Amino acid sequence: MKKNIALLLAVIIALNLMALAGCNSTDSRLKTSAAPSANASVSAGTQTSSDGEVYELIVQNHDPATSICGQYVEAWGKKVADASGGRIKFIYYHGGSLVGADDSVNAVLADTADICWSAATIYSGQFPISEFIQLPLSGITCARMGCDVMQDMFKEVPAFRNEYRDFKVIMLGSCTYAPISTTTKKLTTVDDIQGLRIRAPGSTCALWCSSVGMSPMTVATPDTYEMLQKGVIDGCLNDWHNISAFKLYENLHYIMDYPTPGSPIFMLMNKKKYESLPADLQGIIDKYSNEYASEMAGIYWDSTRAWIYDHAKEYGVEIYKPSDALYAYFTSDAVKEKVHKQYIEYLNGFGLDGQVIYDKCMEIVSRYSAKYAEPWTQSISIEDFKG
Image (cartoon, rainbow, N blue to C red; front, side, top):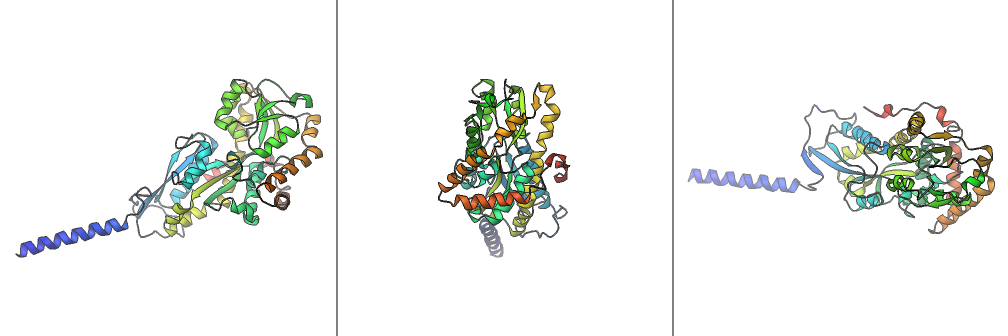
């Protein structure tokens, strides 16, 4: 009898333990394994949560792993993972291996991915205020400046924050500027650009192209190489990083170093997934988001210009400055007034007060004009964010 009672108690205890384990299990994809030992490093000021789990987060990036995008998201992820003592683990899907470029945002909303890196201009009309960053002749000279402007816009323009209401924002920033690259024709006169079939990223950039007489075409970044190779387009407005990451230099002979602003970029996280993390892990993500992640992005993207300059000759690419006449034409008051008026009307079409938003954004740009008047004389290094 005593043996039977002891056996019965053991069974009851085992069943209770199993039930408790079942109650503590929530998202099987999020929680994966026991945390590292207590000796693992955790950033100062954090407190280990009681669940002792490792949380896997899926990161979608449509550009190649070797691109500056791939390098950036993994370097940022390493900062967060190290600060968490290994309790946050990122799984990266580069090169569109999870979903295509234009599905990245939806993948985060649908919980297919937990975080995505992408460019706002890919999603036509979804982030219209963000497209200000790519507005030609706004005064933005580099990625670092664009990132600072984006941060202030997010703090001070309520309608801009509203564009990201469904996400946990990790980073809002900017690519570096896009030069005017062509396959076979060096552009020296105003006549040379008339009817030029050129890949233009985003609506605001296309407005400028049309205003100066070019023929802008919508081409997805991964398709640009083939379109150049086949002669479907005569050139492209892809930023320095795109020229490197997608090896566009193999089909280009000329790069006019004229700064058309870079695309607005972001890293967005599934809001519910963020909220499901323990408070201390949320705090670590917060620490490396916003200002930190934006400053990091600006330096990463601006660093890509130097690589093209260093390697252009070996690929048979001539980099040159626009003639005085062409520069004056590109930057004329008439062109600026026309393009900026069209952007204001574009915002009005979304039920926004385009003029008020435009004026505020231009005022924010003016704050950084002196700081970034000569951006390429400033020392920058991505090594500052590694380790």
